[in-house]
Image 1 (cartoon, rainbow, N blue to C red):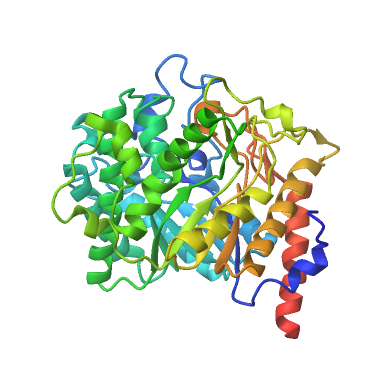
Image 2 (image 1 turned 60 degrees about the vertical axis):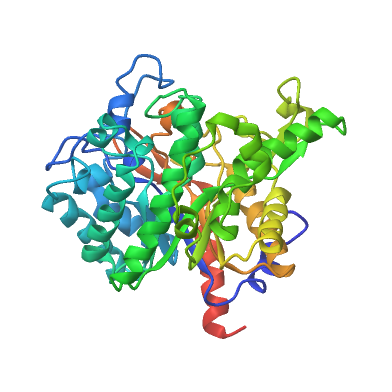
Length: 451
């Protein structure tokens, strides 16, 4: 366990450290066309032939929309402090503008009230990729008008839930929306245009900053921030070409988002590389993007190893590899968190997603997912190492609470610490969930005893 015993971890984390689990709306809710919900870009994207590995969709997923009460009981049984979830924009405002859907708003109000009744802190994300399809028809995130629609959406949710939720994150992983959704096209909405992708990234950041300003002006009490997917970039060799490509990829993933958020500018080397594909930026945009945040969410799964001339062989390091083909590299989390703390004036950091997909087998009612349990233990230890180096951490959340629709991978990849039988919707705690529950139980004992 990264040379740290579980017992030693208890001395690392302060009493107000937040332990949680995370999900997202499209991946678990189902009820895709019920109670007035509108279409999202993922509803539409999944209908395209060949884009989802198993030709599935999120129409039913984990049926959380109907099973939310038993799911909240399950979450409470784990002993977590917090639950990170997202709101489906088309469920609460089907067209992305215009009329609000009371049934959708009432669902999330019941969910939040249910969390609070169970002593669980609600951590809300506004945009976990399921943009209303009607807005996409008008250009989606490539259209600057969508920025204004997002601010309206943020204010509407805050009006209904802002005095109940502990935290509001504007966007989850804007890099994914921009690059996978608009450059490579492997995620919704399936566009393949670098210039569009870069403009989308700017509008996502701008909508974040303007939403934060509007939420604060409205008197919203929740802690406000954004969630980024970040990884250390390591060169495959010391060859100049590998080093140069690594610097470029680091700029595209990390500095392209961190620099405007905390320095008020895009990195010049990436602007130079983009050339005519650089975004259109209006006066005042960068100042808005750099609006101060209360927290920064960091989603971490692995490092990236960069080669200039060929893909890096993930098996060449001899390390374990998850079912997603990602190397298990927990020390990369320490490296990343220390770098953010060192290079930027960051607020408290939260690991808002961390976990692994593994091939699970249900045997005699149990799932002995030793790979996932080890992954979580080692990454908690890596976070503890960063804290010992002075990084201010506010919390850690496992991805994911339960197996779900894993985007382009469909239902073939399982990240959950809870197993879901998609035919029966039966939930079964995996050994990783049992370990996490026991770990948090010991943490609570330590808190209550004042040790």
